[in-house]
Length: 221
Image 1 (cartoon, rainbow, N blue to C red):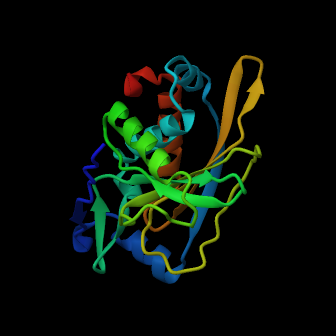
Image 2: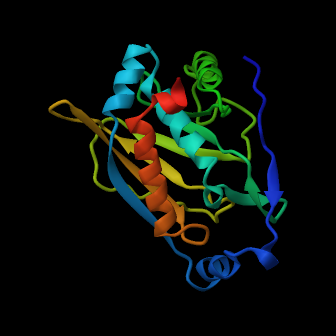
């Protein structure tokens, strides 16, 4: 399926940006980021995925990407040294090969889940067995890391970047499912730069994502 890649952005007017003072403080005076991990109830969405014979990982990628369209503070990056807000972020995720090596793929987000899902399947078929860190090129400037560690159920996850930031996008990492009676939960870590988001924004994001996982038909039907 042909991708219509949305890389559109709006330049931030920093002189009138309500976040300007906080951005300066948390990038220049006290560079700070933070990570928060919560257990999300994915029972209803997991059931929906099984019933409709679709891969849960694709649903996870889609719901996170969809919710990001409602949170401009999480779509801030640089284009030609200008601070911008992208319209959407496209999910970047890891595939595991038979030898346990990994590759990083990405799929263009679309508001229609069925369109996104077909793109996801096409990407897996075309690039899923190709070795190397990034077999799918080119790399879009508005990719967001939406990862999974399905082998371990963790309570905390903190990525450590070793280069200067060129975006302020969040980093997501999901963990192994946990079954308790009829309920299935999944730990999800969200790491973000304090320059663009506060605890309030992250709390809202998690609460809204839980609502999506609780009633998946509102977004996926």
